[in-house]
Amino acid sequence: MPGNPQYPAGYQAGAFLCPQIAKPLELKDQNHCSFLPFIPLSGIYPVDILQDDSERLRETALAYYAMLQERAGSFPEVLSLPTGEQVKLEASSVCFCTMHRDEPQQKLLVLVNPQDTRTVVAVYLNGVWWPTEDVLRTSDPAREGLMKVQTFGERIALFILNVVIFGRLERNLDADGMFFLPHSVTEQAKILWRDGAAVGFYTTKIKGSLCSDGSGECYVLPVLDTVFIRRQHRRQGLALALLQDFCETFQEDEALGVSCPISPAMLQVCRKFLLAHPEERGRLWEVEPPGSWGHRLNVWLKIRLQQSQLPAICWLTHLPLNGASTMCGLRWCPQCLLFKLEFL
Image 1 (cartoon, rainbow, N blue to C red):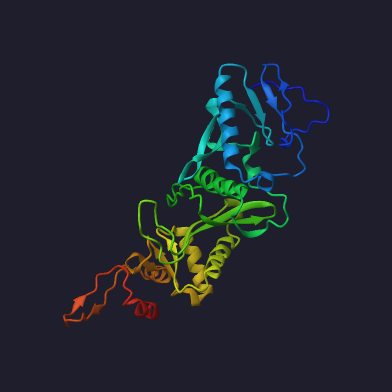
Image 2: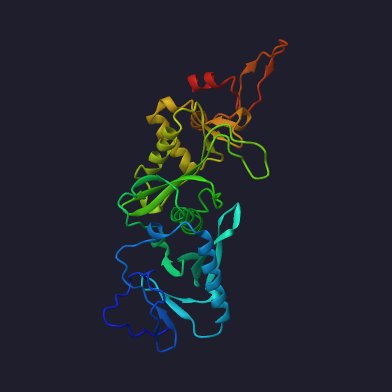
């Protein structure tokens, strides 16, 4: 661990590096490491100031990474985080993460903790290292509640929530094994902002959009695809609010989908929502692409079948047009659906 550097008068450890400073102040410690301290910033955050210029962000990140590689073996710079932690800025401690699964050239340069490479501690944006939590903060009081993702800065916040926070920090692998891939560059999403911070999000597949790049199939109904609430904000009804917002956003559609498989936690959210909103029980479906009748299961039916421990297949006998009696073996049977909903 390097020794403590001599900070200039007026320096406050734990503040933020100001992006308006062209060349950050460099300090030397007794081991000849260069420190990049954080200069007070008065509450300015990337989501509020970043321009929609992904190419510039990529070029500055590539140039910075090349500089780190050229300086390999020399005394490294050390980034002092607001937590007091100090991380060396070396090529081995940074990596590129792909922001969108359908545009691999759009990448973010991130700094990881050498002792725990799952932990991303900072993101390099337009020549400045920002602590991860600051990428999820805003100083704009109008950014409150559920807001549609529109700007490049909001796309970055969505990526950090999805891939860094959920994918690396707050995902419980032993619970349900759920994992979200990086979103598409055109993904329809809303971020939940609360008290100046992004605390959750949900994304949707729009009716008529392609199911995948290699498929000509399109979704036949709007689908709630991914939902996430940060751990410290759970059990406060926020996931219920996201599900209700999804249903209200597409209130003109007769059927709405939730991507299969629905995690146990999300199924509990659906149960609470449908108990409070019985009018939505015939409208909400667990779906596999493209969401047609052979690829959907009514969510309320699934909940009741799990409670009754009955198999999720139709047990009724149908009479086809030729009059022959056959036992229905469909897992999801639209012909029997109304009967099941009525008697379960």
